[in-house]
Image 1: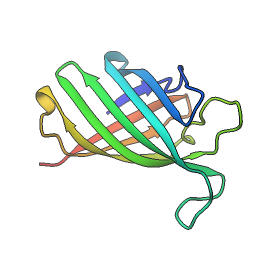
Image 2: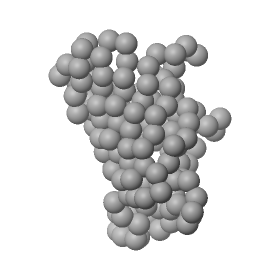
Image 3: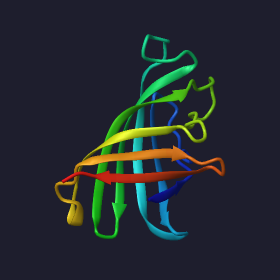
Length: 130
């Protein structure tokens, strides 16, 4: 379980958003999260609730012993015109696929579960499979 903070400090003014955030574990720095999200759809559909847009995320967790990469699609509240990208609603879990890794994480498979905490941090839980 790793906590992250400030996903959107540097926002591009397009449908592509890039970000970086410090990773901590038990309050101590443990690495960096680098990522991008791309808005893939905004209109309500049978699988996309009204008032939400769907974003594809690519994430790189840079840790002392290697990197873990993850990707997946998630629902976010629709961004208001001219505003910074909206963030996940508090306590809404998003699941992304672990696509690989390097160093100690070579061949990593599984999923990472992200959840925004009410204090503005994000909790990241890694679930690896053999």
